Length: 469
Ligand SMILES: Cc1cc2nc3c(=O)[nH]c(=O)nc-3n(C[C@H](O)[C@H](O)[C@H](O)COP(=O)(O)OP(=O)(O)OC[C@H]3O[C@@H](n4cnc5c(N)ncnc54)[C@H](O)[C@@H]3O)c2cc1C
Image (cartoon, rainbow, N blue to C red):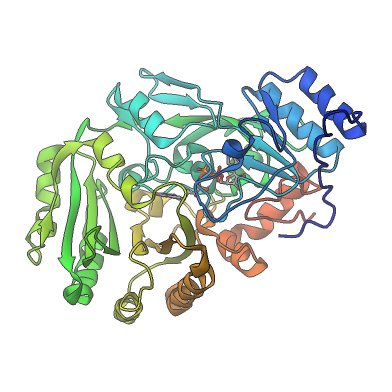
């Protein structure tokens, strides 16, 4: 990511020093700010700059902990007027660490936790600091849900703006397909509403264009009847059968009805056993779910079978333990239209040399309904991809960083011949080729949209699309 015109924010004055120009500017921002402004050394500063990926250790010059859209508008205007690098933090789960920047202004949306569910209209208005556990709990009170991330700690904001893969996507599409409207503070500091009727070009770009076009201060999402009990869970097979299991999984997922969404993981259990696990969720009736997932329970048979009726909320948190906050992570994505036998073989071969028991190779199904959305309807470009193949590397020791990252890239390279692109929420390095692969055929239209809504590229700590007229 290029940062040539970044002004590094000076440290706060020492006790006894007179405030300089910068201090006066921050004081004037503070005067109208409803939330909290944090600088290095302030209580709470280190907590606020820490994100999910423990490998990311960046120190913003100023953190604006916004509590409302007015705060966001003030922070954005302040950053633009002072030529500051800006990062935007929603749920802080972006593995590349785009929520936080060095030396600039972090617009921290974590305090914005409002959720209003309209059960009659089956919609939810959601502020950008909300995580999936919070939104799911609020909507399930009414027997409703929308497609959400498969780890409950992930933020609604970044996930939605990048697309949003989840257990309900086979039936209800991606999260971004369920976005009805968004309130956005654009680079000029104005709050606009984007929907099919208002700023439709911006609304198109927000559904897959990630954080390039402004700071979303509220999302309006379509909800659907789900649960509260679904037929879901995980089966596991010994690694010796890995190739058979992945081939079975591929065929099972390809033929599954819309209500079913799935994932397949090469992983190591907490007691050190390498397995291939298949997780699936049927979001219709429990009876239909039992029928649809019967082949999953019969194949093998599995050494572990936890598939059965369970609360949707419980399943939404079932994978949380595998991805704790603060561990070191490096993730890489390759979307694929199919999992041919050659890819099966390469995956089995690569996992045999996995350098960390905390690392997972995952195939996350995109989902039937998500695949049926017209290619140009949203900025999300991968409508013909059936899976996101993910290298989810995790480890604890900083001395291993280089080796773990090198191995992850090697696996990803071995998958490239089968891949048609990169899921933007899995962009790891942010180089031009990876970013182009993330936006695919939508890139040029997005670059023109960027020129309209953010001509100076204020929002560039992301999978960045430089503006182009
Ligand atoms: C454990 C784990 C599980 C995951 N599971 C899934 C999954 O099942 N499905 C899936 O699709 N993805 C999944 N992801 C990927 C996830 O979608 C991305 O990491 C996403 O970026 C997370 O959003 P966030 O708000 O938590 O992250 P952040 O790091 O806060 O933000 C991510 C990006 O979005 C921008 N952004 C955040 N909020 C706003 C806003 N309000 N306005 C404008 N820009 C904003 C940020 O600047 C940044 O560039 C997972 C990630 C993790 C770590």
